[in-house]
Image (tube, rainbow, N blue to C red; front, side, top):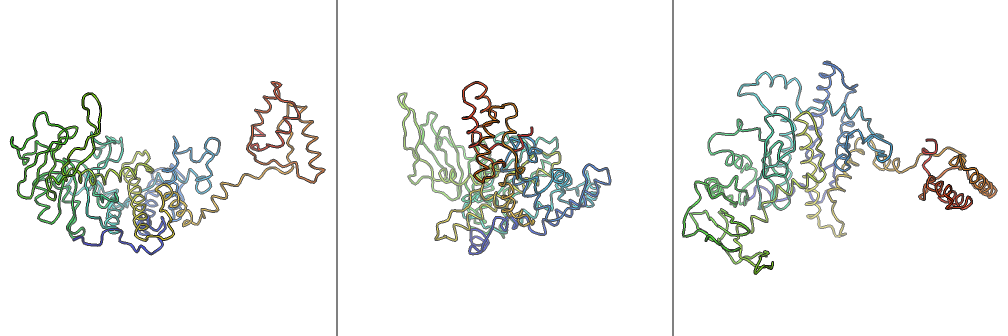
Length: 520
């Protein structure tokens, strides 16, 4: 049985805002430690030679900093400095109205997860067995892993796979994965819930020198990701061919953990029998199996031959799938038999891949010269995505009778950034109102200043202005309207397409011209 009830380890009847869920991972103590270590690192760097003017970082400033990072995952620009540009086509009100670019860059430049003084102690141990290659990320790394496991209990099906965090850094921690969308980067081994894609446990791989001796990386990585006292029993684990081995599956079977995964035929423990082998010209849907103790080995012909090993499935129970098959030169849909193990594997193996997709959609990842900052971005992504998945699960558990829909990931991140600004003392409503309000126009600004070189139109506009003033209206203040541009109207006038009075009336009725452009 599972160690806890599957699902969020939170009260579903409580009001959980996006920020309150995010703070389950970035708790007050975690944020305070980040602030303290960043201040200490800034002090050390400023003593070595200033690059930015430094003002002591506070928790309030740090939440504004986090809101900007989340904003950058929603709105993409080519250069980070473009977020602070006010000219078209950027015209961003936020983040410039909440934090200057120099302040943001100073915080990012000094961002540090570990204590700089303890870093020195670790550096003295370099080239010894006591040296910790991940020391600079350890404080946040361990807190995020612990939070992921504490606030959610996986459902019955779980999966383990590798995850690549993109990086082109020239350091030994970088790995290559030819079968992943991200080929080069830092590798993590991840255990995810198959039904929700919640990242429940993970560890960072630092290279062969760190791998354990004995059964090998594929075996040890699975055992490290399965803390059985915390996880419990009765689970079914799905893995790909890198991890699948009869020795691992038999070991987990004794601990009441079922397993299923694709297997490579060149594994030493894979049974080789001609009697149970597929024919050379096997048709799609053909299958053969052999059982050895609790282990079931199945070969199935799809577009190519696939081999599966399982400790929890029957060989075949009559399940079928639809496939496109070419017969007599014509593609037709055909129903073909499929092994139970293969069907469940296809449904449940993608937990980590779905999690990767959710992270990639609005990732806050940015290029950086410091390897540990890449991990900081990824830990933020894990925290935000897991918070979003908790939000969805809690909404499902509440069974809201009003029928309100849960947040999408996009709206969840938008609300999270707004909550952070409000938590930092910057009400989101005030920020939105400030962004929506147009700049106040100069009082009694005459409309004809737009037409300095068109005297006939000036005369007509003057007549219209006088009529408006006689009617008691303030005709001298420009307002923003949506219509044809003044330059376009002037071009029509010069080409003889329009008459001066008609143009003047159009200028008057659609005079919504940016006041800033009047004086350019």
